[in-house]
Length: 124
View 1 (tube, one colour):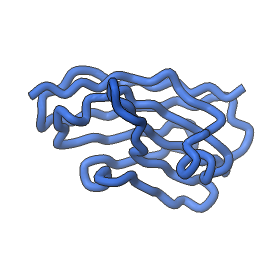
View 2 (cartoon, rainbow, N blue to C red; view 1 turned 30 degrees about the vertical axis):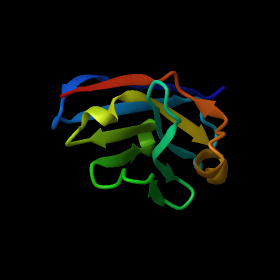
View 3 (tube, one colour; view 1 turned 60 degrees about the vertical axis):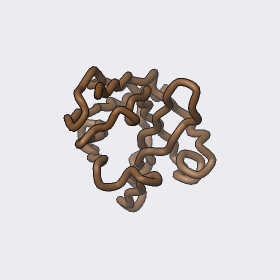
View 4 (cartoon, rainbow, N blue to C red; view 1 turned 180 degrees about the vertical axis):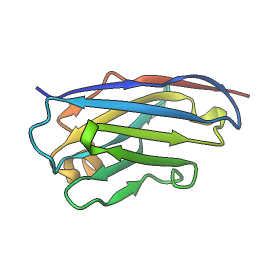
């Protein structure tokens, strides 16, 4: 059973940086896609970024590229989300998600596995 555990969330001032981590366990294939989504209270879930280990491609959601960077350490089954120049509107619960089919993960947003989320709060 695949399990995703996020960490690294917290309270940060506007303009600050955070690095979120996601540890994946129970993976049996090495061509999976893994990425980050976020959801703020009362708002729809947003796509942040994902990486496809099938071909190494990386995608970012609208307005996410530039301040958000995904990094993968495949040997450790870790994926990181580097966030900089944070704004109050980045406040959300950030979720790690994984699927062997990138279309399911990114386009349909119905990945097979979700983490429990880690809260990021950006104060003004």
